[in-house]
Each structure stands twice: as C-alpha cells, then as structure tokens.
Image (cartoon, rainbow, N blue to C red; front, top):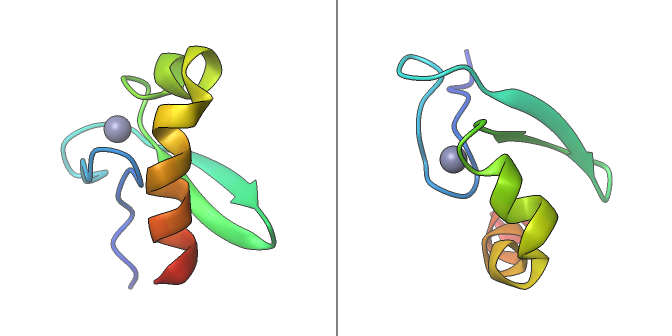
Length: 55
Ligand SMILES: [Zn+2]
C-alpha cells in the first residue's frame, strides 16, 4: 500500500495525520503543519508541488 506522506515536509501518516488533496488530477497529501504555509506562502509550497508533480 502507498505510504501517505506530506508532499511538503515528507511527514508520514504514521507520525501525523495527513489530509488528502487533489492537484492537477493527482492525489497529494499534506500535514496540518504545512497547511498554513500552503495558504499564506503558496510560492514556497509551489516548489514542492512541482516536485511531487514530476514524480
Ligand atoms: Zn508537512
């Protein structure tokens, strides 16, 4: 089974609850610690999104 990890900080769902996101047709996961960054600093998160997109 796929290991669900925060796309931004790589925290595993084994360590912290993660939230499912849909982005450009892909399923991503983000932890609550990174959600404020995504809301307030999307340019920082965009790099991680691009990386996740290219995996
Ligand atoms: Zn995170």
